[in-house]
Length: 346
Image (cartoon, rainbow, N blue to C red; front, side, top):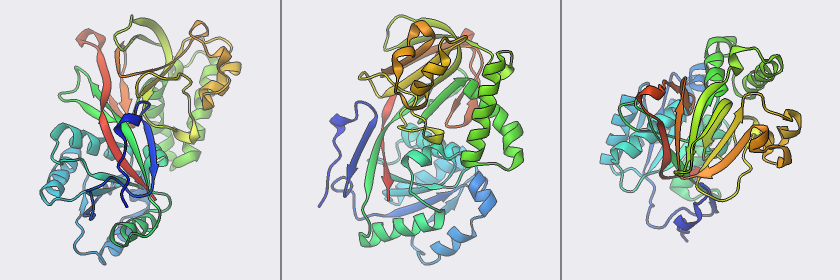
């Protein structure tokens, strides 16, 4: 009773299929990765996960703190022919896992991924992860993998491949952000994180801070960034942007869906220029992709879908919450469709 996933229906980067996962991939051999330094794991500890896995002595559980440790663990899992990897961490460790999987190709094919809510922001988990508290989610995963209990949903996503002159190798992830997103993450690490906030309360505070900065107009958080955008080899669009994001996620923090372009490729790009007009009327488009009559390029709003995007920009960028530098004098940042990965929902 297997349902193969269709690769032809991944055009927009979002494919959901209920029921069993692709043919020929079971029986499931599970490995678990935990980052003890991720926000949720650091606050709640890993003792619950460790105690639960005592009942599964054949399942390897590796605790990792660096990208190198993530890569080494995945290589070991591949050597032992594991085909389902549970990642108990935040967005940054998921990004490190995707980078290791796609750069080193130790697995053939890629394993099915199951994401546990172990971080602080957990934006990737909200869209693609297992529901509920970590131990309860891991219990459901084991019952499904070993006994077929529960109804599974596989979500297939295109993965961003990001190449920058400042990085020695390609980076892979699900969300790219620049301008106020880059500065907002810096604000989160310097101010909000120290307050002990996480999840939606932290997201609401950051959103309120952004709107306050936008209303004041003179604030470093919304200082425009000079950017040239080229999508799918079209002519470059030069803008001073307040906000720039590229993603294949269906929903962002707080359930936001700031996409309103149709067709094209799996990479969704949204940009807001400095001094946007009719901002209040354009807010529905920036919140849920609806009411887009005012969200036009002439008013300072750009939404498009593409397979390849080149950016020449000042300042840095973020991939799944991890910060990187960019210098247009060294060359453009290239974001491409890097392939697909399958995520399990239970």
